[in-house]
Length: 89
Image 1: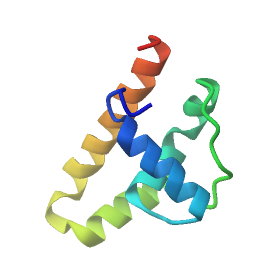
Image 2 (image 1 turned 135 degrees about the horizontal axis):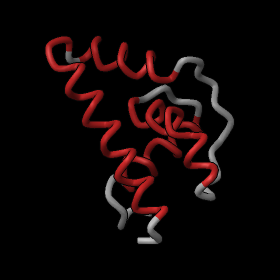
Image 3 (image 1 turned 180 degrees about the vertical axis):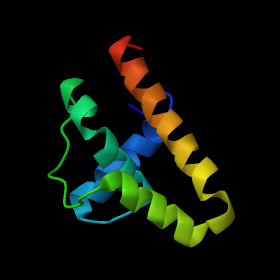
């Protein structure tokens, strides 16, 4: 998984979800959970509602001036990972 683009972030998110930690990585995995499950990943139960909003709010608290660009960058990494999985990379 770590060999794929964004794989280290997805692994971190899976670990955080399994431990019940609300982190940017965990929320990102929660955002992508439906597609990630279809790709065969085992996603722990999601304790977070509205993961997209929670991710943005978390980023805004830590990086008010750059939350939007950081959010978009994380979503791009998630999509890159998903696409690489679909291609069997």
